Length: 234
Length: 248
Image (cartoon, rainbow over all chains, first blue to last red; front, side, top):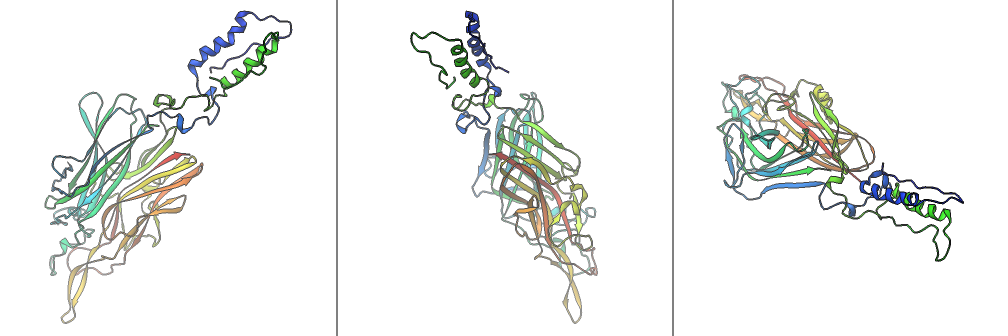
């Protein structure tokens, strides 16, 4: 603790030059290491913070009307215009226990829900063709090549239908595909990513917003979409 | 450095007394030794390097994952239970499903832990500091409509399968210390990932944030003549609650 003491003299004592100089020398030394012990409580004001923010903002915005279409059953990065993939470039090295907060949203447009039920699937999964999903994929580098990590997946249905009780064989009608198509609805999600490794080791490279469908007969279309990422440092 | 004046000024030709030396320096030292404040320290002097690093104060693992991280100006807290991660399956497989015909549930807001005990740790709990809580709940769920046998003519009596239940709805509420602070509104049949943002002022106090669900459906008595059995399942695939406590 860089605190400095003073000398005390009593009547009749003659201080030496060294004694007189000692507190000033001690202050000069200690002033190079000021810390919280030197300061009053609640001393800081907003004006004392430097220009480096406690949080950094990264974002991707596509607000056009072009559709990204996919029938892929594995995740592909949304790319509504073909030349502007839905990704956020991060390229920073987090300190340990820094938080990255991510929010996504977008608009699903005129989907094509051709198959929403499959009798060939095991019971309990026969309604799965009705589903599609989004994923947030983080690309990072720990010193070798780039690696990826899924940090969130969220699902939706093509139609209003639910459950497995939709299959009929002897009655009229076509209840397998029962359900009203759900085009032009928004999608949205948010989550946190925590870096737990050693400070200075990992570079967070980028975030991608991806989509897939369960059944390749269906077509998912996405127009406007965005990613907002907040790096929380302090 | 110090914004102090001499305690005992010494005038010209005045002899220096012993206590002039000590007292004047004591005033300066007392400020240096813990009395420095915003008048002494330059603006824009607090940089990244001067601020303490984040510290993790809580880890939750198992059926629910989560953490709490404290920073100088804010703290972050999260709990998550997801079929992909904590459930170790995939995005198509629900964490649980409740048969609304036969299982026990409430017509009011249901706590998830009452529908599935694995959600015991899902409510987000932490000690907040005075300031603002900003956060979001994200829940991936399904309450779709169904197919039931419907009589389509009386003479002769003819039955046919029809989609039913388009008027069913589901509503999610976000409760902070058992007070409803945000809700989704009624969402009609579908699988949906619903996001409920919220922001409230808090004191320095314990906080518990919880998702609860209200379900509107009806009993689908009677089995179809042909085909498979009908059901009215309510499914949950994932829940996430995170909050940022921005200190005053």
